[in-house]
Length: 64
Image (cartoon, rainbow, N blue to C red; front, side, top):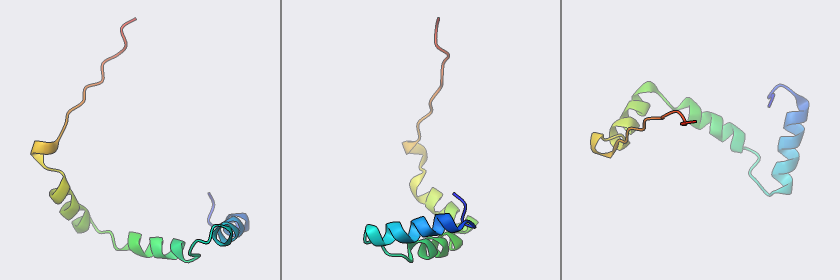
């Protein structure tokens, strides 16, 4: 996907209209991504990654 290519944007605009999607969804997504900070990631990690909810997986090679 190349955001600098006209073909990408032509497809984006035409599929937005064909599928009745909000054409500004890309710019809103970028605005939301720009709000992400290291602190906000730490806050979310602290909220959802609890020691009592963690799993450890060990991958073992196939026995042949």
